Amino acid sequence: MKSVNYHSKLSRVLLNSLTFLFVFLVSISINAQDVDKDRQKAGRKLFNANCASCHKLNKDATGPALGGVESRLENAWLKKWIRNNAQLRASGDAYANEIYNKWKQSNMTAFPQFSDEQIDNILYYTTVGDPIKDKVVIDNNGGGDQGGSAPTWVLWILAAAIIVAFLIIANLLKTVSELKGAPKTPGLMGQAAELWEGIKKNTFLHVLFVIFGALITAYVLFGTLFKVGVDQGYQPVQPILFSHKIHAGDNKIECQYCHSAAKHSKHSGIPSLNVCMNCHKNISEVAEDTKVVLEDGGRVVGKAELDKEIAKIYEHVGWDAEKLEYTGEQKPIDWVRIHNLPDFAYFNHSQHVTVAGVKCQKCHGPVEEMEELYQHSPLTMGWCIDCHKETNVDLKGNEYYAKIHKELAEKYGVDKVTIAQLGGKECGKCHY
Image (tube, rainbow, N blue to C red):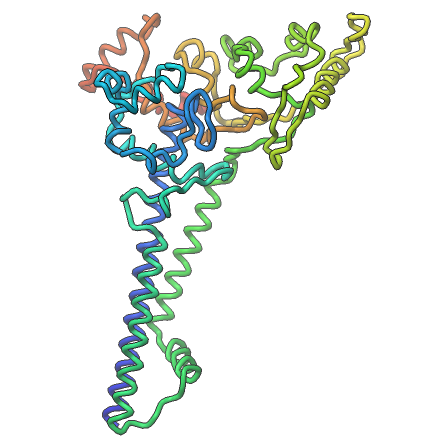
């Protein structure tokens, strides 16, 4: 009888131990995933702001594809290259000079201001890929972890091994107990039934499961609510196929040639068809080898279809391509808006483009590489505030802020005042 009681108590101890172990490992796993998401988000933000204009993850652009770059090159070497590639080449580093010559001696911007953590976050992002568009996930290191926390699959394997070990020990103790004279207990199904009965009678487990379920529900609910109204990655089909890659990328047309209102207006404006006709009066066909690769399944659009898109412009603007004259019959184009801030948020393009000198790519991403335009940035309040915190006030050609900049620099004990310190975090700047 003592042996039976001992076995029963041991089973309860094992049950509670396994429960604690499971909850502990799940919490570690969730925490590890959160840390990974933080690193991924930080790396993506830095990559998009500083690297995306020249580099992609999955294909060559102005510079080489950076997906999984840390699996090919040492971390220490990459940090030297990123901070000052010219200095690294001057030191006689053979590989640095090989890359420089391979890419037609294109000079890469140096980033001496980056900390080790910032560079590590960028490299982590190039390993795990883009969490927003979910187009490409690059993982050349067998799990994509760079040392910040244990990969999730390792934790689950460890949990499984410990559980198996507990079950083996419990079975051995059961066998020993039976050899000492205790009655035989049911087989595996019987033990599972006993375990389930034990769970149903264990009040502590009920409370634990309720708390755990409530936390998971809150986590999922708040995560879902915070995504409401965030249209990052939104890429609608437009009535006319317009490739920014061909116009802004291949033909080097300045963004503000078409979006001229961005320099002096709150809105960047949709170009009128007359702007299109400045070129397309004389360009009714594309070159023979012109192709557009759509995101929709990678469909390739060739010359025949692209010529029809130009014909659509003629139809809407009322242009007779044979007589080379306007017919006077015009039809508006129902473009689908992509970037759309809430009505309660004020944003002025001219203040950013003309006064601050912000490049279009800072917010809209590498537009010159997009066949079909999509919303590159989240455009959330937190994203704007983070930019204001990180961006210094540029006084070049802007004497208006000179006096107040000097006073704020002395107040905060800094050489350069950020937009946030200048008032860029005040609610009334964007909400009034």
